[in-house]
Length: 488
Image 1 (tube, rainbow, N blue to C red):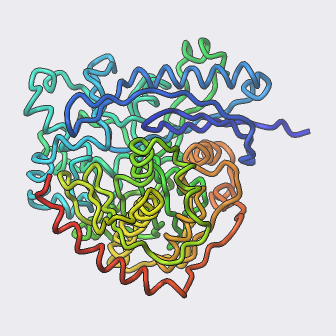
Image 2: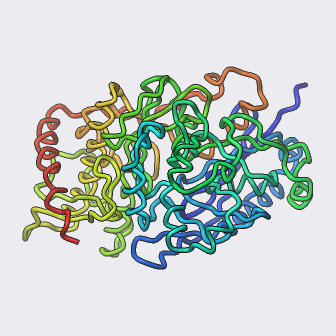
Image 3: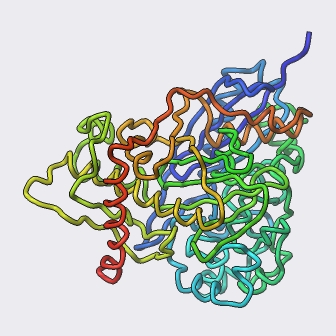
């Protein structure tokens, strides 16, 4: 009888960590979660203590071991996915020198503009240098914390910090590193030109590996502390969006997803690297070799509904329940979801959100509707930018907490004029993608057999009765950001 093997995938999120245990066929066994806080010491700043991630990961590991000792005794490898772009600055002992500067921190907007204007930066990196990317954060540290800057031995990303703790040495995967503005995305290697352009040295970069490549074995004393086998391998892992694509099987040309999480993402898998930075489209390495993906990113998706929830005293679910299942056309009110600035296609760290068209009849139901529509219109901006790269999906798989709203998904389908596929309830996010990367490193099966698509609960088709109305509303929406700029 064949002995079943087990694997762990970790999703290191902005608000908490989730670890899942799966078998070699990707079947879900169990999960464990732990929360932590984000610090906002100044306007536009967003930081986190990397030690909180280690603590959360330990708690998750121990819970899985205590509840599933037999399965953990057969644990073979671990994959980590994490929120991208964060700057974790390590000293000679691989200890953090300061809190991590997170992906949604906009303090380095001047440094980003400066770096983005330099020759060949966009050409080599394949991307605009956004304020949230890692390289301008390091330029900010040099300009504002020079004594600390001199102590930096290595820079890693959030997932990379957990991986450094797991094996005792820094390393980085391709998909996460593509969001630093230090990687030659097409050649899949560190670019000395990009690194020097941001006042760093190439020896401050960790070793690069592919997401399904083994980086090393778990440290012996850590394995002993956790009660894990001593031969557990740690794989490269991935940035959260690449991992989510692996989790839903979006690995072939043109396959894509739309994610309604804290931020919003429209992602398309690509077989070739075809950057188009002028459209503010992200072109990143995929988590598997010889694959890339392109995506548009908006900074406030469910964040927009959560904001409305906070000021209205209603939960996000209660707000959703104010709406019918099927939209019957766009609202007269408009919402521009720039609560934290915007990436695709505006690349504006300072623009802020706004309403337009409010009147005496604009009640909470209408505000909820127009907030959801504003996110849908922002995702349409992303789609239009991606189309400029020469691709357009025929359907998109919906993920993230916001995908629980039938009204929201139908609104997005009507706005994009694209079929949206809603998976059945189950495990198919970044944690599963990380686990699948761990499986592919050990189980010698074709990647396509491991990274399969989830079972679809329903397909949401654009309602052609209303598509033209949403098109007209989108054309009006597109004019809004011009008027919002400079108002804050």
